[in-house]
Image 1 (cartoon, one colour):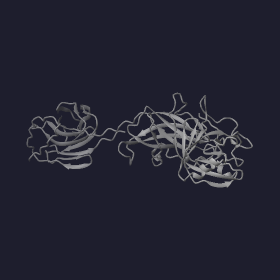
Image 2 (cartoon, helix red, strand yellow):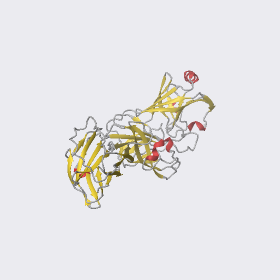
Image 3 (tube, one colour):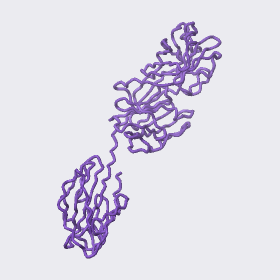
Image 4 (tube, helix red, strand yellow):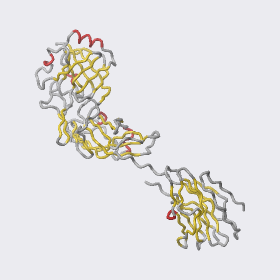
Length: 459
């Protein structure tokens, strides 16, 4: 019967002269099943069948600001708004400068619980008065001077308005068209939607400009800024937040090449009297060189706890996953997770999360039995194999990675050519020959790197 030759790859070592193959008393057929596919190999006189492939390896604190006011104007707290982490107390940032078009207004906060909160700006036409305590919908007032009125009349829909805060944060808003409302209209002070409301304070009719939140730009944190750690409870408004862990996962379905998923697993308790809406939370991930990533809600279900619920009721304690699509070369060794109940609020917590890149999955080698036959005197079983290393590192094949068994018991490996161990560089193919003492059975199973092949038909 003619033998089929196999050409080694260019990187394969030079093969030694083939072992003589005697004629056996009766012919047999060789079949190799490798990686789930049946490949018939007319290379000898024994039946070889692949059986099994190897398995794959495997607190901050701040005064709440969103409670509904008891009067048309929200009543701010008497004490300053503070943020706390452990023993540290940090003043809450407040608006300092309003920029509208080419004009810039310094900001004066109103006096808490004053009968007329706008009185501090009565003799300051070039100063904006911030209604103290409004930090979701920032409400500011201007005196009704001719210059201020002309400015309001010139504003077009989509014009940019900038609010600078004492902590260095800059908030930008996109304006709508000004409108007139009765003085003291209650709906202007609503604190449920992130925006800016600018009021021209005429005695009977107010000219109101509202602008929707667009973006926030934070300053680079200064050395020594208070940051919470993993497992440390942090109170942010009515939300008590704990970062339980952070972890990266490679190979998510639908991910672009070069990207992976990073999950921040969190616990959130609503300590207030009104519901919290997680869709309104600011939750940003920042790497160690300042790159920022927004959440990917659709990927959150793949985390430990799944996505946060749509609503967190008063007193409710929930756990959830916040997912981010990040580059595989995400920069550590520390990541920062930034949380706020709303994007425009200065009630913010920063969490420091240690980061270790996830291990890259090892690519499984591919093993094929090319031929199997008995020596001329019938005392030795010879098995020719081909091994492909698809991984990114060298693959070593040692004697412990190879075995033979049959109904007569374990087989003995007498010789390997070339001698073991075999080192196969990444992306290359190697061929070799294994010589076993012939088992006292008509069939045997050879195992190579976890792949098993049945050899039958031995007389």
